[in-house]
Amino acid sequence: MVGFYRIADKIIRVESLFEDVHEYCREYAVEQQEPDLKIVIRQEDLAYERKKSEVEAAISPRAFQGGSDGTLELLAVYRKIAESFPIICDTFLFHGSSIAVDRDAYLFTAKSGTGKSTHAALWRKYLGERAVMVNDDKPLIRVSDEGTFIYGTPWCGKHRLGNNIRVNLRALCILERGEKNEIRCIDRREALPMLLQQSYRPADIKALEKTVRLLSKMSEDVLFFRLRCNMDSEAAEVSYGYMSKMIREKLR
Image (tube, rainbow, N blue to C red):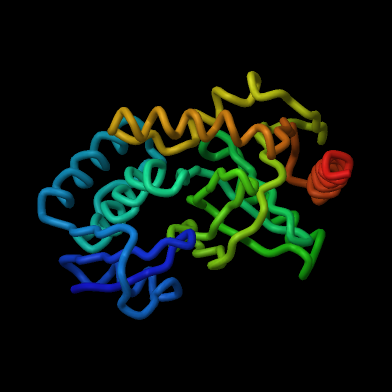
């Protein structure tokens, strides 16, 4: 089975063993055309994903455990995109929840279970129609001379919250649980450990080195923050108020 998809402004040809991936990516489907990336899934790709999932499940109870061959193929397709994109288009995959407000994108990241999606939901409740989900799990980030952009992808979390859009990424916020809501700016050095942890790290050394360089360059455009927060509605008011103010000051 073959399908063509526009993801992060690149045309991807996917040749799959099962139908699942084409249904999953249907909102990104385009007519057949010359692709920027060709992906062919084979049985050995599924075996790799199955073994990797079993290892991750043994380490973390939250990790993906098992699944159909169609589900494993979804993982294999996303992995091949993430392995290729740093080299072919200065783009890397990042684990976080991104929301756009008034054409500016904010990206929340944290250790698993901290509440990235919950905090994004507080923003949607607080800001109403002004807030649009970009991606709730695995957005793509492109770093270019024109700026840093974040893209929706089909891989947008278990609740499938996301849109096929591109937005200027203005802020990246590292979340931590706390009793009170407190936010502050941080520099690249403080942010870097979490950035490296949450970015997809390609197996190919050249792609990995390129990803690290893209993370460094991203700091020229994107402001970094650390937020200690609870899950009250005030958390969205505090975080949006501070970050949007700092963005306006940077863009003056």
